[in-house]
Image 1 (cartoon, helix red, strand yellow):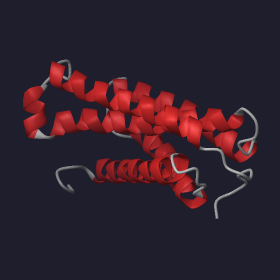
Image 2 (tube, helix red, strand yellow; image 1 turned 90 degrees about the horizontal axis):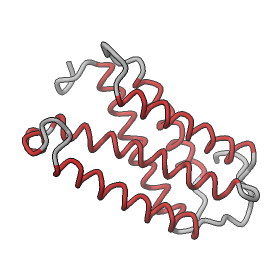
Image 3 (cartoon, rainbow, N blue to C red; image 1 turned 180 degrees about the vertical axis):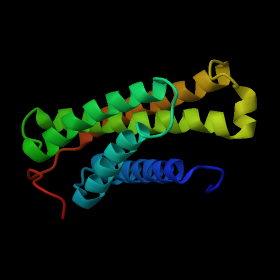
Length: 167
């Protein structure tokens, strides 16, 4: 056990936190600043794919909402990866990429908030079932923030040259 987690859960959690951290760098220092960050982007997309994929190998007795989020995340990431690495952000693929990348980051943060309400005693006391107002308010704030950030990123990120590969 590592910090009360199985080694597999710990690795999944670390990968998830790397995805969120690198995703926030890409969002704020990349998209919102109209800068290409190929290495950061590769880390963000790769760790986010791994987060979603490793979620399916964690022990679970039945299909859970987190599995649905994982499926949705992988589908969104497939579009983002195609737009970035196959279509090189040309034409409408730029907007498609930014939107899908921001959605993938949002889904990771959505799960982080849910996990915080499950695992942090003070938050769990406020919303023990995840249906209470504090949980809904936190998730609502996160959703609105990502909608605003996604709209800003879509309008601000316009790289001068096509993206071909991480450097």
